[in-house]
Image (cartoon, rainbow, N blue to C red; front, side, top):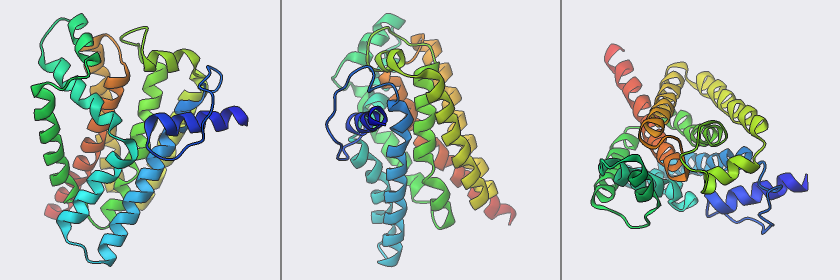
Length: 258
């Protein structure tokens, strides 16, 4: 039990700005970190749903409601996953050989393409979330658990781009089979909830998330020969845009045929 508690606190310390108890980052304590990674998504989902309800109660105007939905994940995570998206954008846009792209991922400086992608990402996210309303929000908030569950699964399953780095370190010390089963269980539980809440919206959200997941695998294998922390962060950011986008597309289809 103490080991699980330590893994929980390491997960929250590393992947969020939420309060967490200090503990030893030993190999034993890091074995189950990815099992608790989706719990951060649960916190983000609850806060996002709470903000949406509060904004509705206070009759907050739509732009402020939407900006709140955009900033809550960023505030909780500290932007660690967005950093992965921007580093990946720079690496892919360089059109360099694989070794050079991996070097660019490690570079802490933001290039021109990272800035362009960052602006485009938030414009797109604003446009999408502005259309996520009513019962769609209750389905949408599950994406934060789903994205982190799929990301955790990839960390212990996909080939690694390098034998060094955070992802490689987690993968070596992790209880692979337990994390795989736990991650898949989280996705199944979330899938059951969203399908019960609204079958068509639920299908759209899941298709959006899984499409981003398969894109992530192909992109990482083709361009980097595996995954690392930046690529996992990139996936998380893309998934949390693709899934609500699919949700909005489904809503528009239902609106047209209804």
